[in-house]
Length: 281
Image (cartoon, rainbow, N blue to C red; front, side, top):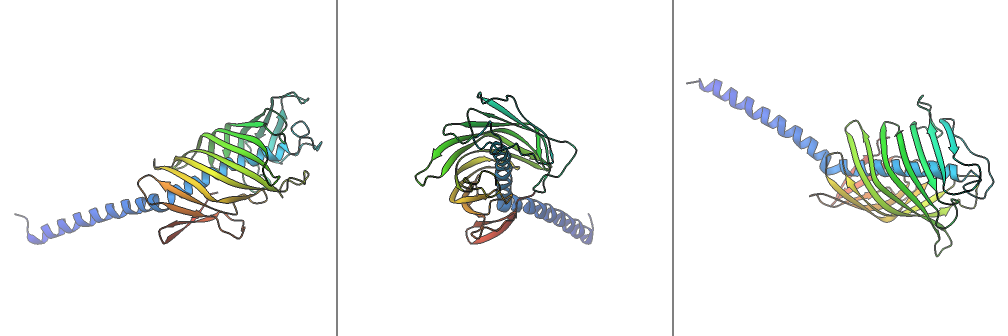
């Protein structure tokens, strides 16, 4: 028979080991329960929105894709930007090819690979759809694939141009990151549409629904309840709110703020508990 002291030591060691395992699992689970799904959703939405922005900037500066007659605009980090035709015979394919040399772009981020966009008509014409696809594309440290459709819906009741944005089979991957993303949104071009030569004053108000799967395999939906404000002068949504439902968890309420501050932070609320979240790029 083991001495009582030895048995007590073995029992204490076992309990300590169990407690350590539970503590680690609890820490991992806490991240999953409280912040991971919201962080993953925000990251994916911003990355696909950024692809739209890049196509929008080019389309607004090229005379084949709109009627402004402006010269093509290049970012220093773009290795080559080409159209597959020199006359306005649609569909026209736009290819944005970023250098793989790690050149920093105008907004302080890095992009690699190719974004393709096929236009069925002039970008500003009602009914035109731009189909965006990715070829080895990476935004900073995240690989991106999927299809994004941007359709011109014409003017709304307030005489503001609006677009429908649809994300199909979106996938964002990186170290310990694998986010599946689908969504459909209406983007109202609320400001800046009358200044063709200035792109960064453009503002879009976004409503709609996202759904997908986070990096832990939990499914989620996110419905915008107060329209996101998307200023092209800022890389992140500057205001707006949404309601997020995660598999087997309580509802979360996401808040980008109400004061149009430009940063990568948002709040997630569960009941009366708040969590600060940073979009990780």
